[in-house]
Length: 294
Length: 280
Image 1: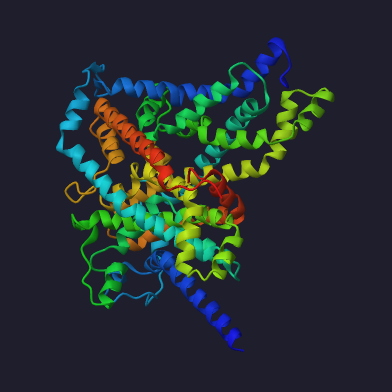
Image 2 (image 1 turned 120 degrees about the vertical axis):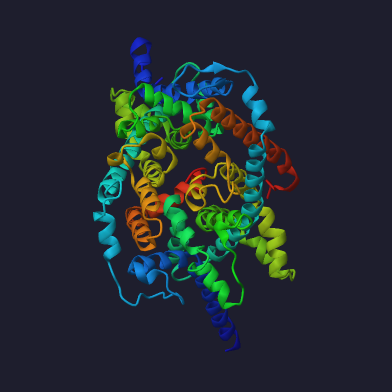
């Protein structure tokens, strides 16, 4: 009603919506349809695209590479998620009190979040250096001979996970901190009067009350885990011997290095399908462990 | 007396724990700074030294002077330009649309908003290839305009802004109508001033996202003179991969501007993360 009536009103509305609508059509709606179409074609970007039906999907699901990539992503998720959840909740609990210097600590925990993944990956490639990296040097102090990390098929993915947890912990800790601050302190006082131990208080008050946030963090971080890219490109270049190949890295290679636009698009739709299914399952499992009342 | 001692002990142990955790978080940065201040020959010496025997700024001179594919100061300037452009484009385009979607009446308004929201589910990887193709046919590859153009559409920002603009009381808008103002007056004199905090939040997050982005510039920009800092670092890594002092100096230089922005706008970062959550 605020835009005025008739033609002038419609024109006003059109002006306000124009950039977004143009962007939506050019960079979202049409691209989604186009990428779906491309996923059924074979296209090297120079010759016209050739319709191949479900051939790309068949080929993809039958390829050893695809299942290796799925396995690598699963390994990343299984290692990363518990580590990240535990450490960000722990950091949030540390920050959830009033003390001198809280701002300084917040900045320190947040520094890795501000760092670009390119810079973060370079730092970690150096830190995880077999001979001169501080991780192995520190391990050496306690008598452990550290692995070759990024050059070792077995240890490359754990190395990438360590870097990712370090980089993301401050971000998720801030989200958890918001949730912790929202908990009514009466609960803790009542529990203390009843003689509950700190662990019991954490287990039976904190955990259930932050569970909606845990759910949110879980969903977003798993979606993000499917799209790991820069750390893999820079830390291991997807090696050694494909041990850290992941989906976005494959899409990038197929599209922009091998110019297989069709196959790359197929990969992107399979990624979409996987993210969708995993999120859908989590959505349905949430009622088993997420507490929304209280 | 005893009670006070216990309280003091608790405080001390608390600081010990939180400082230990903070140390683990910043150890990588300390090692980065330490490495960047060493001479090349001093990097690979065991046992490692946290404080260089001889402090050298050679690595910093090198990254600005050595003829890698793109001079570092050029890349820094490029990053600054595209980050400002992307932030500006995102803020203008999404605030206009969010205002229309929140306060103006038109047919199918809420359905249109739902369609926008639905696109948030689609991973960026799906639209990446077609977006590259769009820029290619518009002949905008290798240009800053092309790099930032997709920022005119941002569903997440639309959602965040619409929420906030919706919360502005109707009385403000009615007052503009009474004074004979138009929708443009409302946008200019009510929406923009009152949505300032959320716009600032969105602004710093967009700036940081663009500054740190790697994949999209990697695809769009291949001309060395156009490359952003993340691409320059990537190149430095490809050409001088064993020169850790240069790589670490480059890292530090690339981080400084974003840290300054963060310190200047810390509260906006925090609300951005706790309110918006989804992206960083």
